[in-house]
Image (cartoon, one colour):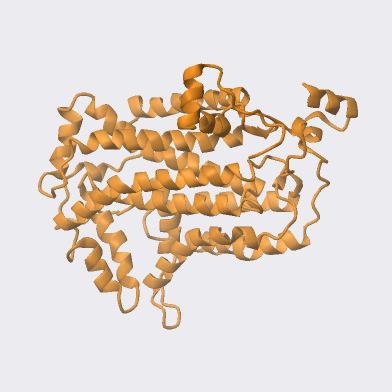
Length: 428
């Protein structure tokens, strides 16, 4: 974000001046996250989750690189190498629990981050590219997490790979060939494990690259804020440091409290017990489920139980599952309201809090439940509502809704309409 009142970086120490002239890294950091980066003064704790997502990515990369040093991508010893990490490698148990639960923590903060985008209209112009890159990051996260789930080579790893890769066989004409190509054979085995391990190691660095683009795109128009009102003058902003570094630091402390509580006291809470049994192609688990963060999409996949005209139910489920995420790409154009934040859009706010959010939670519950009634019927109803929200409710509401009056500026939303208060805030 470039503002005429933004502070210019002027190193005081001769060494820093020399470094800034030869490699302007200090200036880059100062302008990206320092006092040279003005941000809206009214950012709430909803805006902490982007920083937390970046922290989770760092945890995953660091722990993943160390774990890869001890893991053997060999179907005959992969399960035993995982146990070796847990039992014989110094602090291996902690690294593995940090990595496994770090994936869950990553998805938690990203889901909250996305939900904040729905609430405050972060996808609307001029920030469309930020949103689109964010959806790309989410898709890469899903691919990385699925491949990582296969690596322990337990029962749920093996059969999860069999079921999820089997979805590609639903694609007409090329489906079976694509399925065989993905696995390197007709069933998960050595070739599939090698491929998934390689991609699982590579994709986090691809995610890191897209995150850098995401942050770069953010710094062009600047951050949005709970009001959705654009920055108008200097009084609307404060330097990122020390105001939001302190706020993010507090949020990080709260996050680490819960994260460490899970890692040290409940490390297997989110894992499936069948994955502590070595993979056995001859014994199918009673209930095959992916990790919990895939459950809403898994419920959408299973909602299609009968063919639709000439389209097989399996293909319909696959298309719907991918469409449930791809529809997010079109949000900047589906929502035509000139007002961003649902803080001033009471009708849409009710549809999000009492419609979309319960719908996703219900889909998550059904996705983790057995594929039987009444869970299938409930998931079908929730699936219909999910797509109605984005394709019908959102465009209609954005056309007919009468938003509440917006504040003139961010300062007015913080200090009220009193001119003397606003003036003193601008001079502080």
